[in-house]
Amino acid sequence: MGRIVLTEFISLDGVVEAPGGEDFKYPNWSFEFDRGDEGEKFKEDEALGSSALLLGRKTYEGFASAWPQYDGELADKYNGMPKFVVSSTLGDPKWSNTTVLSGDLVDEVTRLTQRVDGDISVAGSIQLAQGLLEADLVDEIHLMSFPVLLGHGRKLWTEMPHRTAWRLADVRTYGEGVLVTILERAR
Image 1: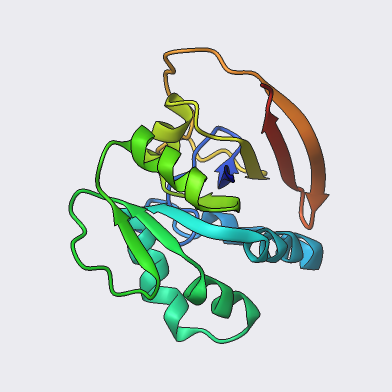
Image 2: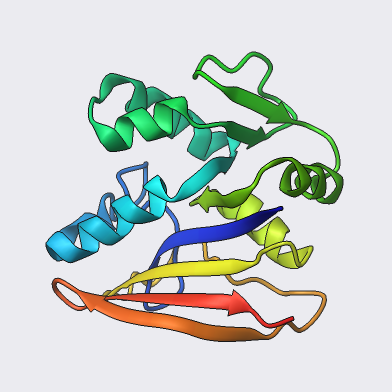
């Protein structure tokens, strides 16, 4: 059975928008901080340990335009692993091993967790992440928090229809004060 693992770069004020260079007032804001070798290894191990990627269309398009041009273990993992894109507008995905999920989010993700063994990583994908949290489909959250207040931008946390409880599984600090918090769903 698969587990949905949400992984986000996040500012101190909860902004998750455009951490890696998209059109935004502060492009590349997450890369202004050195994560150190251990922080880079954490992100690499996180990706290498995933069985599949679950992405929203915009994040998928960013990944699909970048990863096929890279070489190495991480690129091989991303390019070869199963990828699932939640989208009602993406018709014919070009990135290898990609399946479009266009039906009801809860039904599609529930079926996906029954088909995939291991961690199904949801990287970025703000709208998808919010929908998964709202539907109580997330099993684990990895937040890589950067010591910056951005003041505006799309936030991960929105109004929720219900309360959920989480258990702190791990916390680590890397590089220039980059904090990684791993939370598991308390069931």
